[in-house]
Length: 142
Image (cartoon, rainbow, N blue to C red; front, top):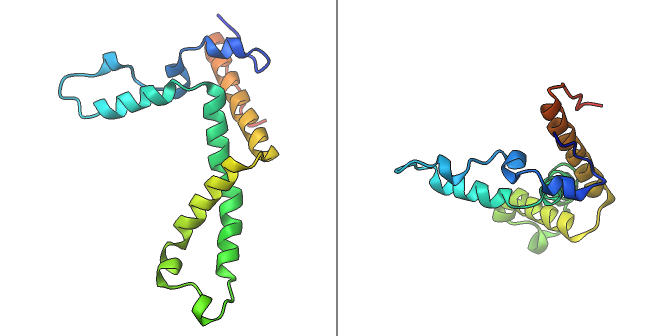
């Protein structure tokens, strides 16, 4: 039974990736299985390190929960004159553009908040893994 820690990246690398992502292996596919492509994609996603997956999840969370609302508020308070005012398409699809801008900002900048969220996600994943190995319950709220 191996205990994982944040201080020892080698211990994280020793865990099978499907344990982190919950992906089914290719051996679980049956002929005619329509989820074959999704299974293959899950396996490809699972090939990434836990640190990369935590960082991606943290970037997405910060983008959607912190940056996108600010961009939406800025767009809504636009008091531009007629030729520069948002058109119908901008009003209808502006939220999609806000989401894309937010994701790009979160990835382009080195936000300490993204680092903190990624570290917490990884810490909770490690605690769950260690608890599952020992058969104990884990408090993920504190």
